[in-house]
Image (cartoon, one colour):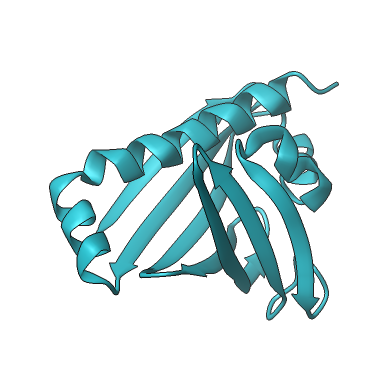
Amino acid sequence: MKYTTQIDINQPIDRVIELFDNPDNMKEWMEGLQSFESISGTPGEEGAQSKLKFQMGKRSIEMIETITTRNLPEEFTGTYETKGVFNIVKNRFVPIDEHNTRYIQDQEFQFRSLTMKVMGFIMPSLFKKQSMKYLTDFKNFAEGQK
């Protein structure tokens, strides 16, 4: 399953990148994120791997992030692996004008278990809704920063 989401942020691109590129800020806009732990490499750089733990309702989810492309603001791509799912997320940032930035996110989900294949087929809107929630939460966080 592939789709693209985007949102406009009322902040200049340099400020948006500064906020996005700081892993300490992830807890401010990724609801449910419990921890972000570096496993190997330099965090945020190509080849780096990190373990992310989320609490989503009663479910605990652990995933491994691998940074595959770092060329901000044009592209920051990573893969996210968890039980039954392989997700590729490409983040792009485009200046609209000197005060506003468009954040575009391309998602590709590869489902590896029957349960996840069924969920992806029957309820693709759940995945899109969660992606849009993270973009909206990042926008709200970024616009609240000076």
